[in-house]
Length: 235
Image (cartoon, rainbow, N blue to C red):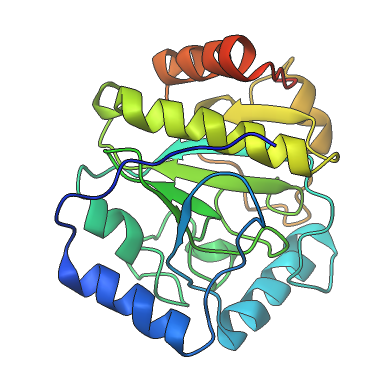
């Protein structure tokens, strides 16, 4: 099993870490792999989020469940901010913020991913891998989502890319169903193999144009996966 030694956070914001420990103590800690990368818990799953996700899945995929069965695709993003704290806290609310008007028609559940990677390479687990997130229109029913703190592809660090590659390698090693990898900017590009997984039942809910994480990040990520971890996923 592949392992990852994650850089210790020097002095993270106390409120973020305190919340993670409070939730963990209350029995709400996110599911972590038994072995593999050193992943820290920042759980966002609640009963309300489960129900809102179930409603979303039924409307968009015809699936009356919040669970994610046999994910086939990993989608990589950047968060659009250089703040590590904000990169976590934006996913905490159960309901979508009013400011997200471009996707409000899709449903009430807030955006949510399975992992967030801080600028120093620290990996945080937000949703269990068997829970559906909301991060890629048309693919949430089959996709795990990874976000990296950054306001642009150029702001994504080498440490983040290294941690992301190790995390993806670990997931692929544990989950035989994972076959595909794409950057968010690639998710609806014609000719991509993962396009066969696309499903959207709402006629007025079209994919939005994305630029994250960009060609530089995905090229470096795929290179590391192949050369360091011996993993090649179809794009």
